Length: 108
Length: 113
Image (tube, rainbow over all chains, first blue to last red; front, side, top):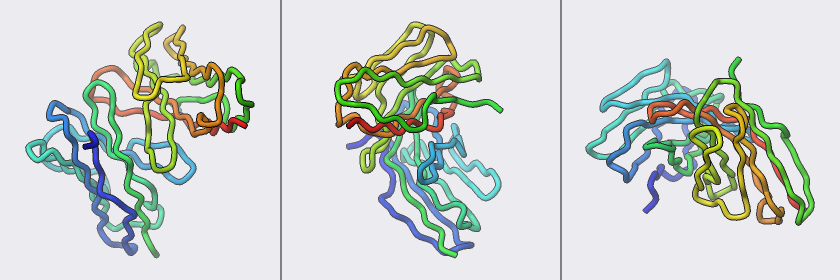
């Protein structure tokens, strides 16, 4: 079992819809959770971090954390074509462990 | 604008050459990391460093070494380049402590022929 698993993609949603990206992790001692966005041919960029159970909102992005169930999710509301990218989930306990990513395509 | 700078965007080297990839950050970060990214394999950690002159092996250190003589600079060395080391190499840095995310450099696309 991988330490960090993301829902297999690719994920395709129409413009204006909600995109839901999910991630589960195996290390119960993990304390910090991150989402990175990676455009094709570019390097990953940190877009969200979350440390406590519940929701954290930043503009159109909401990160959700449930430590008891060991999952993290990222919701993108009012999805735009510019949101089309690969999204990486990372869990940090010392150094970060990354999931393999979910590729999102938002269709106009 | 804070950033992580990798010395080359594209690099072509011959099999058997010694290759140096340089990474410099201007954010006073304690931690620095080297990853390689290959299609279908995700990000794989090669080496990391929590402080000057300190280094730790990651998941795939074979064929690589690192050097960190100054806080802001972390170098990745391919001792004898091989074709299976053709990849995208990403440097990242962060503050120490688990609460911080990483800032990545723009990457070096290395091709070994």
